[in-house]
Length: 572
Image (cartoon, rainbow, N blue to C red; front, side, top):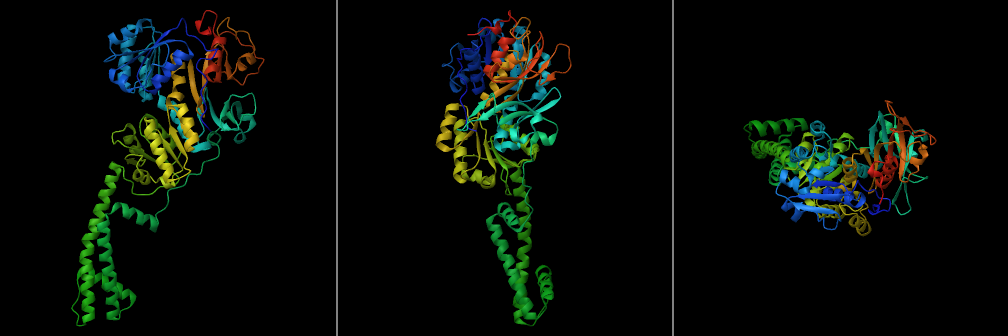
């Protein structure tokens, strides 16, 4: 599915935060930029970005964003937060890739403003669930956890649909023809003639959200994964070529050839049978020759004895070298066996680590590549027994080591767009037509790549994760995200405010709000919601709507659900 442009940020119905609320964002990478862009352009909020002087020199340029103020500080201390106006801020987003640093900064900020809404970016979600209990109003989000399923889905196609669990039910994204009509919850997208997706159409969708009743329903038809190839003569030869040096292989070959030649000569000279000849050859090679008066037999015995004397230490050396090289391969990333039908993942940072873990959980063979031995995911991949190649993915030798010629897909998820593109193009040169999933920040760049290099599958981590961060910062409960091409749909829950547009209205009013669909309605005090409620169902105050919507659609629903005294209902 081709990348599609995001909706223009200055849409006429864009919501405005109360009186231009102030939000403080800490960081300088792509996610920070997307957060600042969403808050300032879509929600008309005032945004202050805190970053270090080094980050300001090397990070993203925020000068093109109206309403965004950038302040360079040496560290996130009390003075830095006070300079940013933390006492009057509505929310704080800590978007640096530093779990401990973000926790420390959150504690400082809450001491200065106890009413602050805090959203922390963390890789370790198990730690995050405990950390959020330390704060009055805090959410912990992992951008890699949100984005990784999109890369897995793109690499495997229909073999790994996006799925999430909600109120005791499991939902998954599927092709309409792959699920029974009774399991379809709502339409998600229709693929147009040019390959671009039309999200949440009124009808004719080929991509739907469905409820799953079991593992088979969740993953659809099992994806054929080739089992590891059994040991065969060619595979043994390949292993020996990689584990044993060329000079030692030559020496072994010469010694073995002499042993065979001497054995044949000894058998012929002595007139022995085949079995007797083999027996005499081995006895002579490894225990010495008996005295013989036949010159031909003596010469043959000498050759066999010399070959046997040479073969024993050579075999010992080959075994030792093979063991040492195998051990080194585990620590340096040199693969000793070939792979087939696997997925090659380049980059073992936050996203790459979650991608390889997800692929392994699905039973898909994976080979990972990273240029640094100290990358976050290298140790995790090895713990999961995933082969890791340490090297530059843009080099042909590195890609060949990862068996790029026999892989099913290449997923390139390093943090550098240029490096990602270079690795993808080199892989395509080695294997034309290879399925490539590329991590890119710039949507326009992705579209140009599609036209020029026929690399149609690209994903942006910041584009996928930013809507969930912003929604959480605005105190909306985003339950899941559904990537559709380069677009993102949000699954969220919102209350019906007393006196709002939706108070007393039929459910069809909310369902027809544009770019949104209602999945369930939960009444106040009821433990379980009503799924797929009728369109004539009347909404009451404090009902909770579970919806799937685009960012613009969710904004419209929030305005319609807000009570008259809630300023989020105001529009531009």
